[in-house]
Amino acid sequence: MVGGRARALPALLVLGLSACGGGNAAAPSTDAAFTADGSGVEASVSQGADASNAQGVDSGSNAGVGDGSSAGTAADGGDAGLWRPFDDTSPWNTPIAADASIDPDSGSLVSDLASIPGQTTLWINIQQYSVPVYWVDSTTTAEQTVSASLGGTGFRTGAASDSVSAGTGLAPIPSGAMPAAGTDKHLCIVDRTAHTEWGFWDADDSTGSWTAGEASTMDLSGSGVRPPTAMSPWWAGQGPRACGYPLIAGLITTGDIQAGTIRHALVFAYPHIESRYYVPPASSAQGTTSEALPTRGIPCGGHLQLDPSLNVTSLGLSSGGLMIARALQTYGAFVGDFSGAVNFYADASPTAQAFWSTGTLANSDAAPIPLDRFRVLTIGMPYDNMN
Image (cartoon, rainbow, N blue to C red; front, side, top):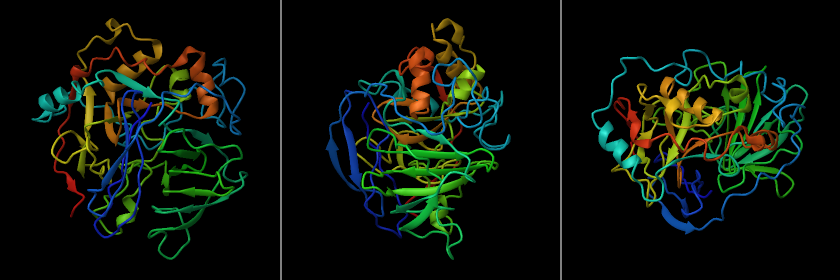
């Protein structure tokens, strides 16, 4: 998997930040350093093919999760999928109404989505460019100091201004935790009892101390939606994804699959995401690249739905693929990032990868879902990252 993604920043700040979403092995990665207007100077870097499901040590793991024989416990997020982040009224957890309005440009947007050369089937990022989740008890997990180039809400809790730009903060990162393979290097720490996510983009501890390109927390008992970066303070809208989402939002977890149903919307990425503009639940915009342009595509926060009249049992899907298809009909997917492929994301932690590798979920399990049977719900008035 390869891909490229860049963060679009408000006009009052100039930072050199770059990241990627993920794609198939035929697509080049495009990482860029972006100025305040999000235009950037692009550099292309070719990445290798998918890494194998190499296993590691997950300090939050529990017997049964790796082999799929048990629903697990709260330590690994596997209690039969009964837990989901955010409240029931969150856009991530709200079923799409039967009379939901369709965007006037849905036809052309979906036509573009379904016809990107070399990217005409759905992919699930697992081994690279996804999000490893580590489930912790923050009252007993030792806190690590993280130095971040950009901090969002909660990164420096207790500081006079919470966060402004670069700084340090504390997070309960367990021993042995590893950021995702690939240039995004996401890392997600979740304490379900404390209803808190510590989310990082471009996380690294190769020097013996943790650094990150972006770091922020999220209250998982609320809506899961950050305020727009267009509002003051702008940094409150910054999150570890290009579109500002918390990392747990829209992620396929082992608990989802063990429960036999995905009870939330998914997060979606593709090469032709519209840059510069965003709509809630997104709180920030994708930066402009050679593929992500302000003149085409669905913006951050755009809501896709798989045609609810489609008989998904006729598609020859695996059990995991069928759960994904049904979730896309019921809850849909929110555009959340640029990627070199058309893809969703599954938990990439070593414990989860061990579970997926038993045949529970594979990269191609969503491939039979036809891209041309999606529709785009009404987008509404977008925020302009340039303003």
